[in-house]
Length: 63
Image 1 (tube, rainbow, N blue to C red):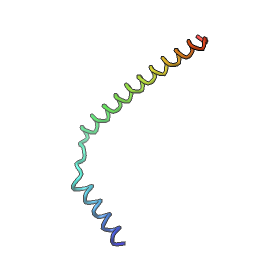
Image 2 (image 1 turned 90 degrees about the vertical axis):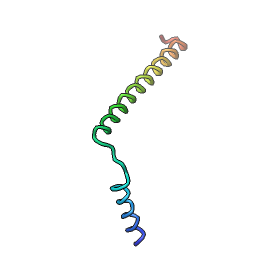
Image 3 (image 1 turned 120 degrees about the vertical axis):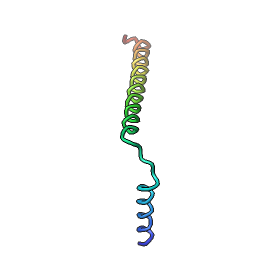
Image 4 (image 1 turned 90 degrees about the horizontal axis):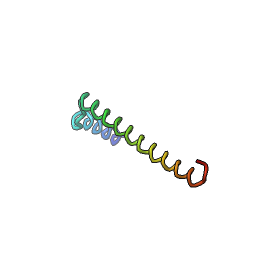
């Protein structure tokens, strides 16, 4: 039991005193970048999927 308590104390000390947490502005900026990158990647995947769908319909004569 002493090892578990020591582990929890060490984890708390590290999280409170040693970890450098981002400021609200840094976090907001990173969030916006991630959202924009996700949107761009989703649009690229949608475009490639649409292209492959068109090619397959063309090959199978459905178009």
